Image 1 (cartoon, rainbow, N blue to C red):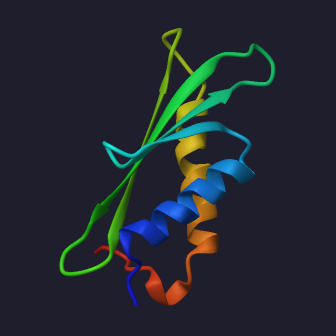
Image 2 (spheres, helix red, strand yellow):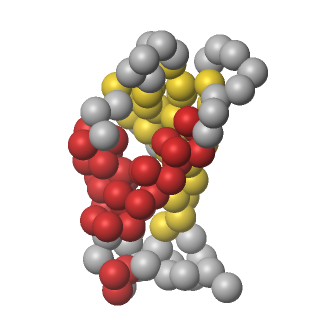
Image 3 (cartoon, rainbow, N blue to C red):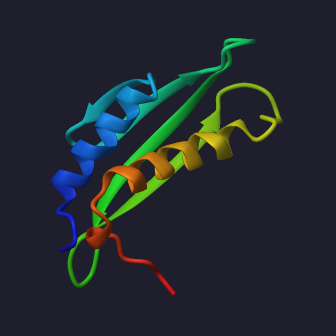
Length: 101
């Protein structure tokens, strides 16, 4: 059974909390905005999470991560996205996941 947008948003917010990212929910844009601070240099990366309705049913998770400073991130933004997606995948019931071809 596909997940409704609200349910997937709750899961994403719980995952963000488990990752210990600072976050806010933008009710107007229906997106989660998070800030990830690197341990060593204290650089801040912005992560935006959107959940959109999917056709014919269910929801799609969109994640974007961008560094605030510098030109290279040594893969940090990719790691942020992959960590979030992996934890969401581990949380969502397997029967609710739809793999794209």
